Image (cartoon, rainbow, N blue to C red; front, side, top):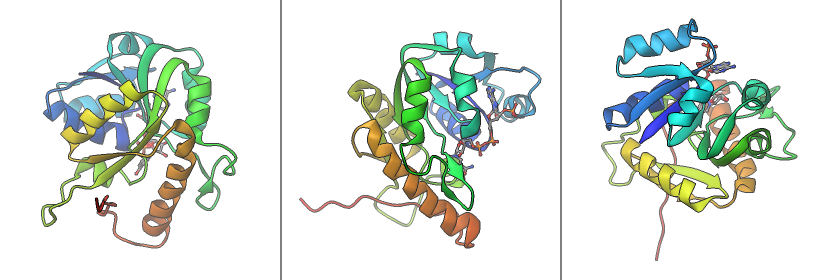
Amino acid sequence: MKLAFIGIGNVGFALANNLQKKNHEIIIAHNNIKSKSVSQAQERNNAFKALPVQNAIDLADVIFLATPFKLNEEILKSLDFKGKTLVDCTNPVGPGISHGLESKFSGSEKVQEWSTNANVVKSYTIYGFENLNNSHFLNYNVKPVMMIAGNDQSSKEKIRILNSDLGFDTLDVGNLSQSLHLEHMTLLWVKMVRANGHHPNFTWAYLERK
Ligand SMILES: NC(=O)c1ccc[n+]([C@@H]2O[C@H](COP(=O)([O-])OP(=O)(O)OC[C@H]3O[C@@H](n4cnc5c(N)ncnc54)[C@H](OP(=O)(O)O)[C@@H]3O)[C@@H](O)[C@H]2O)c1
């Protein structure tokens, strides 16, 4: 697939780099070609192209949003996603690792509201970027799970394919409104690791008895 990345920092680079190795085409959707993270990403992987944001969106099959949440409204308001899939990798985090929107609604529902003609899917948010850099747990015969939420089934199917390429099993937890609960899972992981010192190289797995 052709994949555009708005934001190519910790999260964007980890996903783009591993997906490029699985033969996806990566386009950095930049708003500033002099950005340090854009040049660093291209130094680390010279297969990445870079285009202004709307041009990158126009070429892409799937667009990833991996930017600081507080910038999202400003970034998104001038763009047209033309019915494409927008993967929301962002998390609204407030003071003291609280929910940044006071748990009234999810960040992903705001991303959907701010985006023109996008089918938003929340994914890649419930773990730190360390597990997006490396999602392989060789001593187990189950894969790590990636939980996703969204309203558009065909968009979620695309993300299921990308998850599989990255080494994740996909658990579809339902409509985009379920994102609020995924964002609370994020806060659990972040508090454990970033505040309480748990090591970052761990994920959740999905086990089901039929
Ligand atoms: N860090 C984690 O472990 C983790 C895990 C899961 C989800 N998340 C979420 O993922 C998001 C990104 O986190 P991160 O750690 O990857 O952040 P980061 O390393 O700071 O990267 C942010 C990226 O956004 C770009 N950006 C900023 N303003 C932009 C604009 N107006 N247009 C286009 N690009 C812009 C930055 O470019 P410049 O270099 O030019 O500023 C940079 O490439 C956050 O919402 C975070 O909550 C983080």
